Image (cartoon, rainbow, N blue to C red):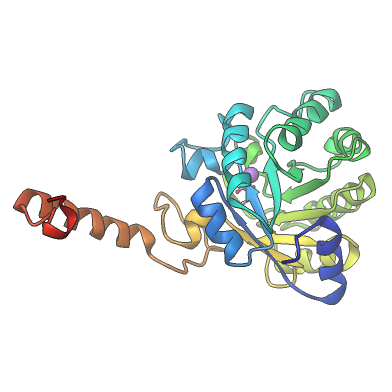
Length: 266
Ligand code: KIV
Ligand code: NA
């Protein structure tokens, strides 16, 4: 088994091998994804929405993230593990960013962190990469800016907006990110950025020409039904399957069909 590293991701881009990324938030899921050959597991702050039932990602705390990252680290052997830095854990100052990023590696078993934002994040990104912390960037739709953006919308549609995202991408690469998440941007913009950058791009709602793809696990298997963005493909209806199983359990306990003799100690 070859362990995933940031160097290996860079090699995959050079070879034209697509990079697979999914989110994970707990031991059982991390184990399943790791054993299925997913290259990178992101403990996303999407945790707040799909696991904790929050309206958006803003209330997620460092302690929430560390708790779930530890569980994911225990379940994974091969994947590169990336911890998502929550809102207000890195925006205050580069010192705050490096201190909190350090916790992901030191306490929680992560190999890297992810931060949202463009050029405004360069001092923090430099401080982290210079300290030996691999950083994944994230531009385009950045959900921690939801109140400023006025909702979850496609970004970079005008030439001015596209130019800003391209320049942010290049600046982040210069600051040392090992890869860049492109969220909800037109495919042509994602293609240009993917060609311009040496580091791999990981797309979500960014078309087929990114160097890798990421989705939220709960969306992929049909476990989150509050909202499904256009860019999601549901590969299973696990929510429906689990609901049926639980309904049958309820029926059988009520009727006395469960437990049967084979579940019973004599
Ligand atoms: O929190 C998250 O899951 C993410 C990915 C969707 C990129 O940031
Ligand atoms: Na996130």
